[in-house]
Image (cartoon, rainbow, N blue to C red; front, top):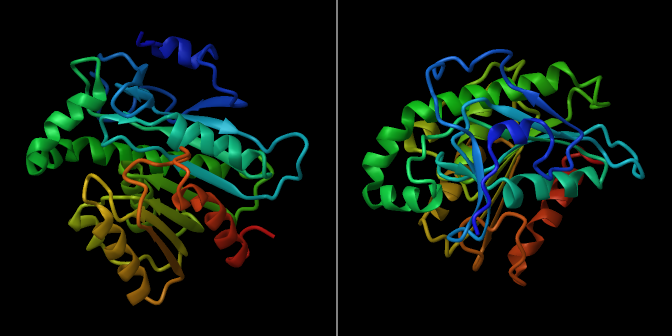
Amino acid sequence: MKRIIFSFLLLTGFCGYAQDETVRVYPGKAPGSENWSQKEAQIYSDLFKTEVVFNVTDPSILVFKPAANVKNTGVGIVIFPGGGFQSLSINREGIDLAKYLSERGISAFVVKYRLVKTLSGDPAREMMEKLKDRSAFEKSTLPVIQMAAADGKRALKYVKDNAAKYGITKTKIGVIGFSAGSTVALETVLNNSTADAPDFAASMYGGPREELLSEPMPDKKIPMFICAASDDQLKLAPRSIQLYNKWLNAGAETELHMYAKGGHGFGMGKQHLPVDSWIVRFEEWMKQQQILN
């Protein structure tokens, strides 16, 4: 049976998340969507085989502080789950990663950004139906992408402004985005002021539109970790290579992992394939970049 949990439950702590706190991205209604009336909800998606959140109108940040039994590394990572801007893969690409990081002394912040309205109650299947005409889908989604980008930038700024509160070193705040969330993460890098940009970034099987990939590189040299699978069902693997080449040609630090198998949306899921170890490679990269000591 599908489990639907409405937003008032999510914000009052009965959603089963183990985060330390939930922070609203905006003090009032989010600019540009003041008249939205849809209700945030969560279900288990039979299609995606994971929990998804949809109809987000009030963006929020789920805060996961370093576990009590480990040393705080001073690193903070803002996480943007994916879902085609129709939903958020809240566990596999959000909470599961946040818990993993917190157990290693890293402060993690999972962002629920605004999404396209779901009419059917099944965001995954609704999105797949829309993707039959990808060009039309991308065009219709663009206004919401811009809102999600604004949410992402504001969430990152919150973490930067509150670094001392969470015991985070101000020069060790990064972003990681999965699929559509990668687009949100890249917006914080490519369309942001130097002061508000992250110190490092990671793109997981992202599919940023050509216009975003054509944006000039930031003045700040931001190292980039990129990961995807060649058998991506959405055929997005080439976009990761384009992103890698963009960073490489600019002389910025970058590392690309392209796995033969893994599909799209693998996140923190386990398939008993080499792709399962991407998170270990990410940790190794952070150590090489001297983000983690």
